[in-house]
Amino acid sequence: MRKLLLALLLILIVAAVFFGLPTLVDRQMNSVAHAPPYRASDAAETLHQSLFVADLHDDALLWQRDLLQRHDYGHSDLPRLLEGHVGLQVFSTVTKTPRGLNYESNGADTDNITLLAMAQRWPRATWSSLLERALYQAGKLQHAVANSDGRLVLVRSRGELQKFLDTWQRDPQRVAALLATEGLHPIEGKLENIDRLYDAGFRIAGLTHFFDNEVGGSAHGLAKGGLTPLGRQVIARLEEKHMLVDLAHASKALIDDVLAIAKRPLLVSHTGVAGTCPGPRNLTDEHLKRIAATGGVIGIGYWDAAVCETSVGAIVRAIRYTVDKVGVEHVALGSDFDGTVHTPFDTSGLAQLTEGLQRAGFSPAEIAAIMGGNVRRLLLASLPE
Image 1 (tube, rainbow, N blue to C red):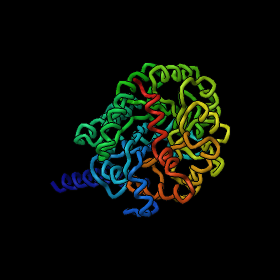
Image 2 (cartoon, rainbow, N blue to C red; image 1 turned 30 degrees about the vertical axis):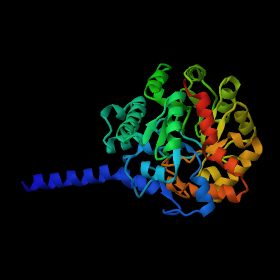
Image 3 (cartoon, rainbow, N blue to C red; image 1 turned 90 degrees about the horizontal axis):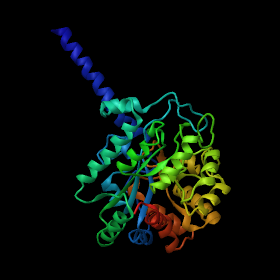
Image 4 (cartoon, rainbow, N blue to C red; image 1 turned 60 degrees about the horizontal axis):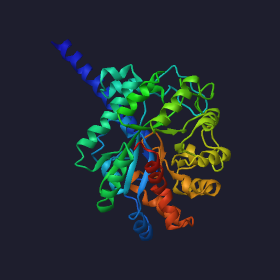
């Protein structure tokens, strides 16, 4: 009996450590430089409350947090989104990351997410299928939407977005949610799986993440190549279905190849710019101009590898640089919240960014465009009818 009790105790200890590990990792890796509450000037708060705010990238679906409950760690949940006056949030699904992840060179032969999926008790199918991981995270968002009492609304079409906006104008205590995938390795090399993602509600498709895949090269991959033959078919299928192509994490060769064949506006959901912060994935002036020329939008990130400093000032400098290069109508917010990054604030502190833009000399109309107006325009023009 004593041996049995010791064995059970050991099992309980291992289970507690194993299943508690995701929350510990979440707390440590999705951190902020300054804890809430966040203060901004009266003028900034007044302006901020008049804005439609949209953020192009958040990885909250990866973690075992309940989106509908406020947390004292991580970067976002519905209560904090509402406190930050966010009108639209793009939620991305992370399905694979390599061990020893770095910005320079990663292979595709290892994976961290398998262990995380097991520890968070995801369905067994997700342990071996990247497609199932994307679909499971989509299901998590749909479950949150269904239980939000109308405060979180999944948007899949222009009509759904316009209906949300009409309601939001009368009552802004609600957030539109859009689904994106961080890389297209979840299609598992099969073009028809684009349709599976579309049917699950995905409307933005990142092509690559931290490694080269069957579609093309990553800025952080080994070969860093361009579009593969499958990748060319994928671009055509995405455009046919009115899914936005996201060039975040794409290699320079991949960006060039997509620019050469794209017929619709291109998106970069979360990035930095080489002009203020050199780095493997930060966009060159040439790529900024060519992406803007498609009618696209570039989301500026908040973390140090994107803007070279963890501060509102660094984010504003990157925004100012990009505006000066391509015009204010092509610049947006791309936080990368909950993407294992360290940021100046969580999503409840976005009025601080509005204040930073005011201090940098942006007009109220320019601030409105950057903080969400440009994303709203792009989605109303680009989502399926």
